[in-house]
Length: 90
Image (cartoon, rainbow, N blue to C red; front, side, top):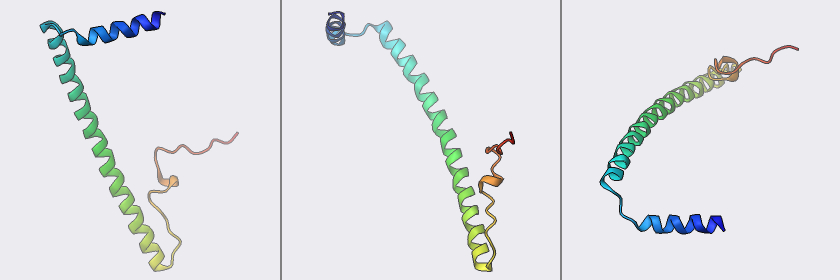
């Protein structure tokens, strides 16, 4: 019964007009969210570009090793990844 009352209140509330104060609060919150989204987008773009160049370098090195008949030593492999922690010996 409480859920029905809450839903009905939400529907009725959605038809009411916003006060100038509410509009200002929403505008401020919107600006902050846009700034955060742009910052996040920039960070993700930097990571994507870095990942692209690392992948390109790895593929080029592997292709060269294959052409030379060597076993590929991949600079982007798990062994060379600073983010990967080696297994600890128990």
